[in-house]
Image (cartoon, rainbow, N blue to C red; front, side, top):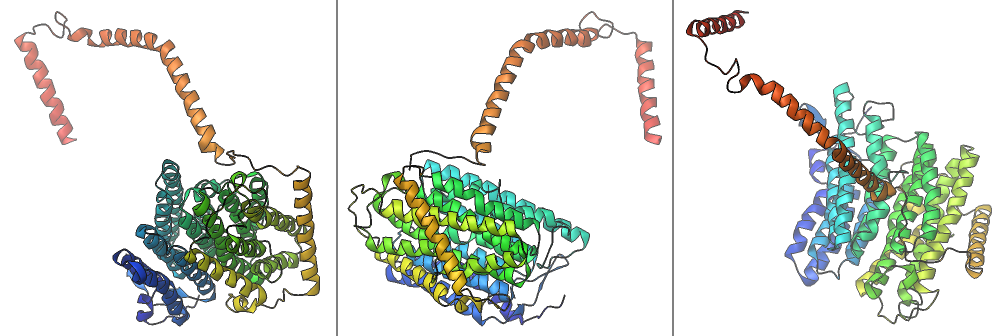
Length: 571
C-alpha cells in the first residue's frame, strides 16, 4: 500500500493538540476572555484541519514499530470536521456554566475524537480511544449525585473493557507481523475479531448497548450534548476505516435500527428516548459500513456528520427544558411552547432533521444509505430501514417536541433558555437546514465522488407519504388512547443482566452457601478434628517420635540426612 508522506511539521500541527492546549487555558481565564477562547479553539482547529495536506506525516519509531500520529484523507477529514463543528456548538452551549472542569473536559473529549480520527496507526488510535472514554466519564460524574456517580463508574468500566479488547487485538496483529498501520483490518485478520468487539461496545451493538441508555441520561445537561456527538461517531469512523464491506454489519445495523423504536415509544425520560434514538441512527450508519463501496461509506459518513448536529440540537433542546423545569420526564412536561417558543421552534428543526423531512439534513444523508441498500437488492433490509425511518419520526420527530412543548399544559411559566444556549441551537439549526437545502456542501467533503441526487420527484413524494402516514398513525393512537402513556417507570432491556439477574444470582448463591455451611459445617469440623488428631498424634508428649532417643540412633539419622544432602548436591 502506498502512502504519501508529508513533512514532520505537519505531524505537530494536529488539531487535537490545539484543542488540548485550549482546554488547559480554560480554567485560567474568566468572563469574556474564557468564552472567546472556548469558541475560538474549535474554529482554529477547523482552519488547521483544512490547511493540512492529504497524506501521512513523517512517522515516529517506537520499540521498532512505526507510528503515524497524523494521517489526513477524505474519510478522516469529513469526520474530524464534524467533530470540530460539534465541539464549537457544544462550547457555545456551555458558555453560561461556571464549571470550568466541564468546559475543559469537553475540549479534551473532542480532541480525543479528532486525534483518533487522524491517527494513522493503531497505537495512536488506542491512546485517543482511551482518552475519549476517560474524559467523557467526567461529564457524567459532573452530575455530582449518587445516580450519576454510579452511572459514570459503570460507563468507565465498559469503556475500559473496550480499550482492553482493542489492545489485545493490536498485540495479536503485532505478534503476527501484520504491523500497526490503521487501514482496512477485516474480521479474518489477526486480532480483527477483538478490535471489532471493542468497536462494537463503543458503537452500541445489540446486547452491548445498555451502557449508552443507562449513562447518557445521567450526564449533566451540557455533558449529554457532548456525549451525543463524539463517542459513538468515533466508533463509526473506526468501523468505516477498518471493516468496510463486512456483510455481518448489515444485519447488526438492522437490529440496531429497529429494536430501539419499541423502547423509545414506552420511555418516559426524554433524554433516554434520545439515547434509544441514537442507537437507531447508529444502525443506519452501521448498515452503510456493512454495505461498503462508495455509496455505503459516503452514506455512513454523511449521516454520522449530520447526526452529530441534529442529535446535538435535540439534546440541547431537552437540556434547556431541564434547566428551566428541572425535569425531562414527558409525564411532567407540556405547554412549554408558551414560555419557550424559540426553544420549541429550534427543537422542531432537529426533529424534522432526524425524521428526514425534505429540506433538512437527514433527508440528504439517510437517502444515501437507503440507495446503497437498494442497489444491493437487499429487499428485507430496505423494508426494515423504511420501518425504522417511520419509527424514528414517531419517537424523536413527534414524541420529543409534542410531550415537551405541547400535549397537556402542566402550568410551567418559565424564562426562555439562556442566550448562549439559544445561539448554539440556532447555529445547529442553520447547519441542519444548510445540509438539507444544499446537500452538495456535505457531499463535496465525502470520501468518494457522489453521483446521487436526493431531490427527485419520486423520492420527495415517497418520503412525504411515509411521514404523513406515520404522523396519522401517531395521531390516531393518541386520540384513541392506544399510544403508550407517559408513566413514571424504569424500563430495562439488556441492562437487566447487571441490574437484576446478576444481583439475584449472587444473592441466591449466597443463600445456598449459607444453607450448605449450616448443614455441612458441623460434619466438616468434626472430620477435620479427627484428621488433625490422627496426623499430630505421633508428635504429642509420650508418643514414639516425641520420646527420648538413644545417642547411637540419633547419630545414624544425622548420617543419613547428611548423605541425602550430599547425594542431592552431586546429582
